[in-house]
Image (tube, rainbow, N blue to C red; front, side):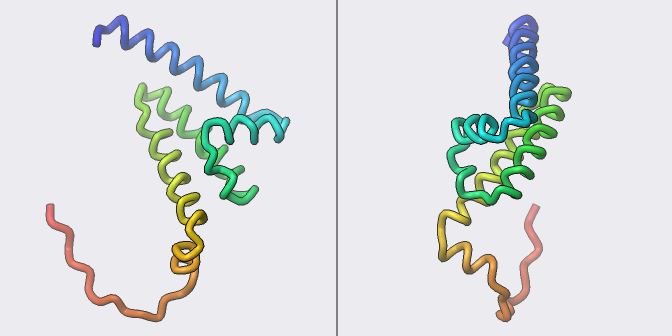
Length: 113
């Protein structure tokens, strides 16, 4: 990729990020919900409180990613919240992860590097 192309992509991403941040920060909750559902249909599985937390974290991570020229922060935020929604989508998994466990699963081995 040429330096000119990288600058163009950064400029487009910065503009798009600013627009999304403004839109997600809108007081029009219906509009915000429509925008979120268009990009992330799984948001329907989150509670209102979790959706608000996702919006805050997404805006923050978009700012971080834009300032660094790196999509990793917002990509990570989206991935973590999508995993949360995946748990809610599976009642058995949600029940297993939300109930206390009295079981001792044994020693966890030290990860190999």
